[in-house]
Length: 500
Ligand SMILES: NC(=O)c1ccc[n+]([C@@H]2O[C@H](COP(=O)([O-])OP(=O)(O)OC[C@H]3O[C@@H](n4cnc5c(N)ncnc54)[C@H](OP(=O)(O)O)[C@@H]3O)[C@@H](O)[C@H]2O)c1
Image (cartoon, rainbow, N blue to C red; front, top):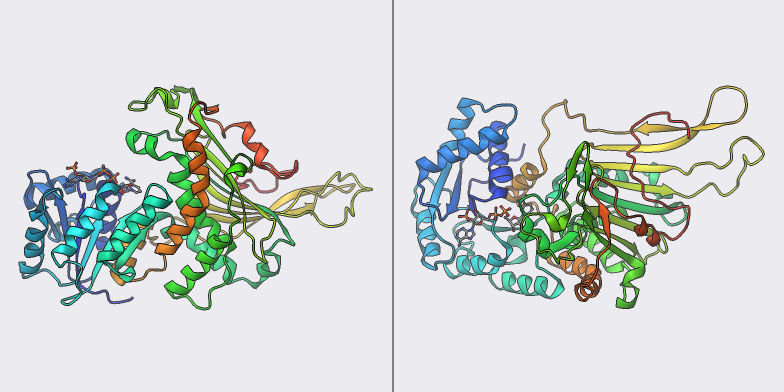
């Protein structure tokens, strides 16, 4: 195992949702697995009038709620001894000078620093700049790393402005733009599956693939994030970031090696090759809708406009679907359909790759009416799997086929210890491995793809179609499909040997 540099891991916004539900539990798990550096201090910045003692009691409470398999008393004691509270309001300039003194003058603290901005995005520029004004970007005594959370900007212009501002104070090498989707084991498995198996390579192109679908569906509504969600919407929240990242992994060329820059170069090439959507073609390429009242199981649930904190005239989309083409040698004219929605029938993320029909209808004189096409399904969450659907002959008299599934799932949740996405990414930050983080140009190109859609939708504010909560979204989104034979794939295909 790699020996990690000792460091101070400073969390801004430590009292917030992300810190409570992901960052602190992940750091606890890493401590439990002995994966943290031998010397580490976790400094939590907050403006509530707490101290180390009250903070540790809070953290214990949050961990008790979060760690389902129970807390280990020794591990908890070890972990808490590394956790500190720094009282400071980021809105006050003097906070940063005091923080610098605290970090530098506490003898037990290591000299490498991570600054994790788990803050409202509007604060990123100001906090990064104030860190730099106090010399906390200078790498003389040790390395300095700045982690920022998505969203990286509100639109193309805002993202460029954020980037420009961050880059005045921190080098690209010091920046870690986190998209926790990239830390998921199956997402990484897409990469291994593609490039460690020669079998697939000859098929992985426009000659054999009919289309690709990337779906992220959530049964949940907007929960308590009304303000954030209503200003963001599904396209910004999911497609611009997570789903385009999945698309790059499916479509990229093999990198020359596994270093972060080589991988990110290839991903950027894919984004650059996506055919721009002119404003007058937005309706042919994108569809949006909002959930209305509906049923989840035996429960009635309210529509989006009835959710607490949502203005009654909001036309923010809770469902977005787009069709994209990648204009390069491998993918020309293969549609990639990306779709996401809240209050859908099921919560799952899946990449579904549909192969073309065999070129000859050899079985036309038999009872087989039409051979069903092959699918390759890559489950991202909650189930992680890799499944290929093939046709085999059904035993018995006559010529009939049925579907069978080759299941190449590798992640048995009961086997060994699996790092969750945040755990893996936090370790990557400490290791200084950028490969699962977004580079500035990657973010910029991803915004360029969705920007024309956002601009058109932003002015069309009079009406938005709806779909009943608890369904797979509106039928009308089918108009994005190129051919009648294409349709949304909702079924994860786990049921082996279903007769067509
Ligand atoms: N939550 C998630 O699952 C999730 C997922 C992906 C990305 N993100 C991103 O992660 C970031 C944090 O999200 P969140 O959900 O944790 O937000 P949140 O619950 O609203 O937390 C924001 C944090 O910022 C702190 N803060 C705000 N103004 C401050 C100030 N002037 N001085 C000191 N602290 C201040 C808040 O402190 P108080 O507690 O004192 O108000 C709170 O700790 C956001 O950029 C979000 O987009 C979150």
